[in-house]
Image (spheres, rainbow, N blue to C red):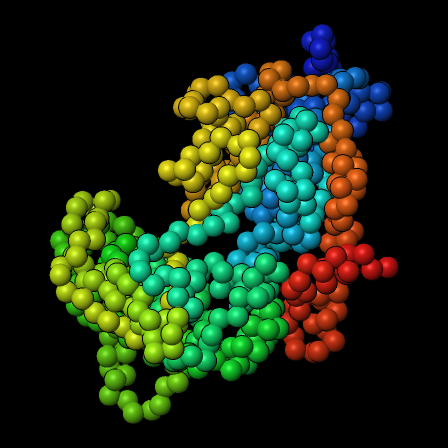
Length: 542
């Protein structure tokens, strides 16, 4: 597994040979010795660009198998990454670590970075946000810029970015929702889970959502995934616990006055198809003061699911936990002690209509069709049995998936709501994997693979895209003429009257949010600014 480090001069092929001992040393020692050799060569007036050996696969980054080109001339590669969530940061990290001298700019629509880590992770899961320290390390590179408050497609076009950068990576995620496609979905009190999550997390575009938490005592979340569990937990958790989180101030006030006491999480298929993790399920079913209700007949599995569960370790643990919780709360039914909140986990039900309440234009209930499952274990299909159920509720939130949206000039699949690509390189319209690509245009994250996986799923994803970029530069597939990059972009935006938030501006926003939390002495990590204007004012403060 150990590979030698060596230098070769470009473009003529002559170079500096490193001692053979580098190949025999451990990877860590090899890197240290190579670093000393690089410093020596730099003092001799050389500069470096990484190069991968011919045997290295383009679909993976070989961290212990690197060749550095030694060149005295030529432009630096400039990469613009649209979107500063996990996909953008992990792509940037690979480029910055593997390609010394590259200039990377992270472009973000909001004045703040981190994407779903800031606005999607539940506020009572602050530990999950520890990944921000990794992203801060990326921003600390002197050749990495943050260019916030820039809306690609409005403030600057994709074509303009392509003219400014050698490579443009699109990693702006999935900003739209999949609909249920049933009558009543447009009633007041019906909205997407993403909108509700962004609302309580202080996303400036959703601060005006104003969900009615006093119109009734029951909410329904459609979809059996971690997002649905997050929403149920926030609605049912005590306000005293939430006060210690960075939940938006307005959301905390609304939840303090909330009349919601029951939450139903509804899935169209069975427990074996639930997408939540065992850890998330254990937390929400173990909440103090919350009774968990399930129906034994909805937990029963046919032979296909039973066999699949027994053969899948993680799924077996999750289903076992459901059984334990159900048994525990069946016994607790005999206990007369009052319980304030109730969580219902429902299966084999498909929403067919959101019913209007006596308050005209507002949600009053949801009709559901009971299902049975057909098909093989990997292709289970929910088929209506003819039975129906009406569930009274005041709120309905759909958590049935996100979808990406295209920007002008971007090849896009309307079927999968993703960008067709080959190892992260965007394919031309009509091309398939291995076909002709758009020179200098790349994709990473949900826009590349669809809205699946966890934060860590973006690590390998970003590495693949970054490797394709570096290989394209080496192979001469990119325009190697000098380009203006971030400096040119900032000049263009200034001319158009766009106030750009740079790293220093973001750090001012972050400092003010932490100071706001410290001043109230609640123990919360930050009190978020929740409007674009307040963020821009903070970024511009002395």
